[in-house]
Length: 269
Image 1 (cartoon, helix red, strand yellow):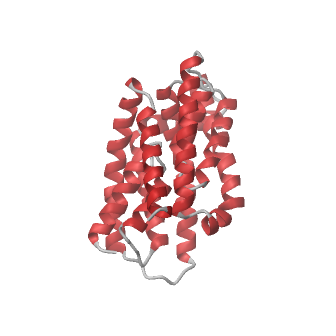
Image 2: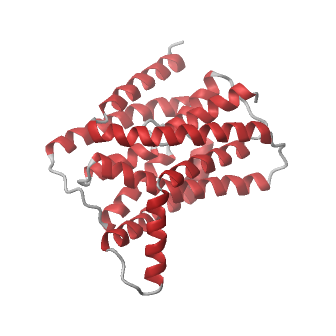
Image 3: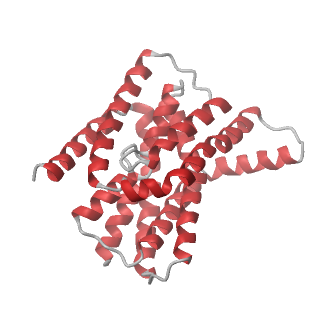
């Protein structure tokens, strides 16, 4: 992998990780389209996951500090703010479904579903899901209130992201909206929920890397990670501003257009 390939992969990971357009699906497509091969794919994937996790953790550092204080106060049996307590429990419980599903299904997904055909089909189905979410959001009044139960159910939606082409952020934002949360509150919870699961995924990849004898191109990996970190910070800030004012419809049409293009290139050429 040369520097151009490293920058492309880092940019794709950073831009798509927190948008409802599937980072894993885009990485599969970009590697195929640009014929990008790496001598150390495990190292790159692990470090890119940590880079985007660092970006979201830095952006929400104030929230994380409050959550840490809440946890320590709970352990010390001291009084805490109720909304902070609910957010803490919702994040913990919401992480569990994806962890269980990831451990149980990771080998099946990596062996059979990391294909352009799967990505094309799932991108289209995800767009239909977002269509329904936006219709339901328009029809049903919103409560804008997070509960522990909602946190768990949003975590169940997060399991869908195991399938390449299904966006983790899209699944969780859509799940939150279906459960009565606003786009902004659903997006904020989705980003916070990304931290433990992406740390877990990155750690798993890092452990796999330790057990393999492959050569690591650390210079290219560091370049790609730096690009991913900076681009992820920009995208998080932009997207939170976007959902304050607009709907998810642009991402619906993007998903339909991309899935149609991929399907055409895969099956008709």
